[in-house]
Image (cartoon, rainbow, N blue to C red):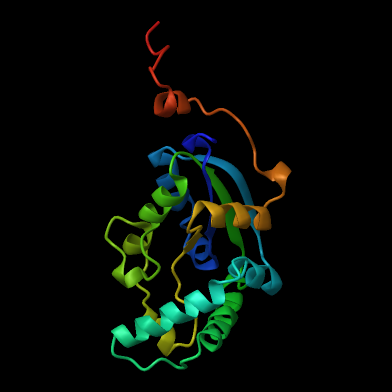
Length: 201
């Protein structure tokens, strides 16, 4: 079984994150917690690439549509449709416009519990309800209500993989095998060495 320190996750800094000059701030949050950057590129993705990204999981359309309908109803708002697939068709169109509006930075981060740690650091999908101290909670004032009013995707700076399996699929979608590097970072000996051998000379 692979050691937890080898777990990887995909992060995308979305066009709004780049336009707001938050690349360094976002990267530093992951570095400070002890994750290792093993893949990095900047590109303007195509609409096809974005649609494929969000539909790598064949259940994404149904599950996301159902969650969105439920979220509307919890707020006492009538959803625009009762059909989950119709809802996600609208979501996908918004995401394609948003994610192709400018460059994105795609990154692969590695380290113990990287998927869960990154999700904790970035905060919930909706910036308005994200905790203070998270990236979205500290740097974004957008909300589902505002994005619905403006008929657009919520601007929340970052995408992060939701599970280890999802991360594996997303990394393959954004990076070739040779683009994810294997190297040693000195601080890993402090984070992962069982006995902390070799600190004292």
